[in-house]
Image (cartoon, rainbow, N blue to C red; front, side):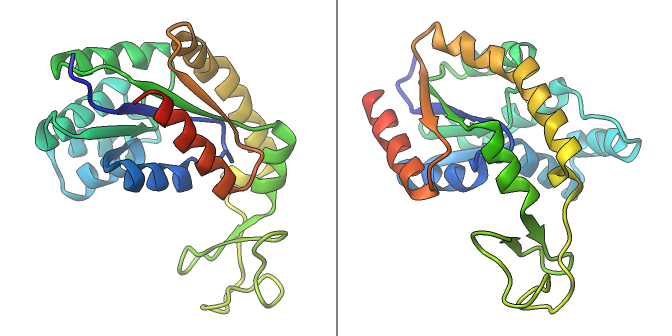
Length: 220
């Protein structure tokens, strides 16, 4: 097996994975493979896989894991095996991990570490229920930590901020339940291989990143 840095980034909603994914990719010169990004790219570029995915999306269905895995494989074929990889959004459960490990084996690669940003449920609710987004420019605010200058109006667009459906309490509760049921067993799978870097996600993003760096460096 090649000794590339191949990491999975995982954590419940509100853990700050998006921010940390970019930080990690920049620090370690990783190709960031984000499920959301590659889905959008394939759909926008009207690729064969993108057309298939769009059919599922347009009909309100989830894109099958096999289709996402095929997109990931195509991305890896494009970038090759002599680089570091960071995967965000896939795999999400044990079944997806079977597909994921099969792909890695084809490239003579294996997971070096899983970065698991653990965060308390109360912190998740506090972060997400106070998040607001501008529907025009998509700028993100937080009513406690990064509030708009004027009451519930975007600083730039001057339009009323909105709460995303994903940031409503009942939806957050459901997403946390799904994470515990489907994704947490994947964390346990990699823990048995001593490959999990567990990070306290309750801290601020700077401290979280410092701890991630310390964890990754132990695996290098």
